[in-house]
Amino acid sequence: MWYLHSQSLKLLVGAAGLILTVAGCGATNPETPPSSGHAVQASRVALQKHLHDRWWYPPAITKHYPTTGVTYHIPSAVGLAYWHGNPTHALLTTLNHLFSATTVPQVMTNSDPSFWPNIRQQWQFPKRSAPPYREMTKPLSAQNIEIVSAAHSPYAGVIQHWDGDQVLTHSVAVGVGQPGKNFVSWYKRHPALTPWLHFVDVRGHWLLYSIQN
Image (tube, rainbow, N blue to C red; front, side):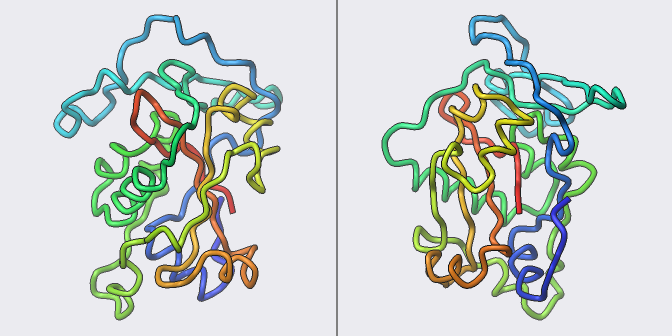
């Protein structure tokens, strides 16, 4: 779980509306997901009134902890695309949609189905009546984030361990600093307070599937 370690992190997390159990926590090496050639049906869950093009949400792959048998989920390999070009604008759009969301379905539309159970159980929203609300909900800009291949993120081993090589190699990680602050300067001072959000590109849509901090 992403715990709040300080007041600074509380403000940062408040801006994102994120207090989450990270998907796959505690898992051992998962098996490789099925090939992208497998036919699947779209995940519908509770979003029928909010998703007009549900077909591109392939259902998550279900895994089981070998010691307890408890299930966890990882992104499907169906529709995954490799990172190419400059995704900064697209990822910023998705991030700001996530951080400005006021309902669970709004968050789910920008997330992979493997992360939907965590969103329903753990996602919290900043209180509009809180004094620092305006500061916390300022849109992020390119200077506030760092985008790297997930294989080069601080949590590459965690993603590989829980989600497998295929998801890792198709993912990007976004380090999120404080709105209004340069990411590099922020990260040098607060590496332990910096959340890394992991995304997969599913048929042209950037979807959140893991948060590590």
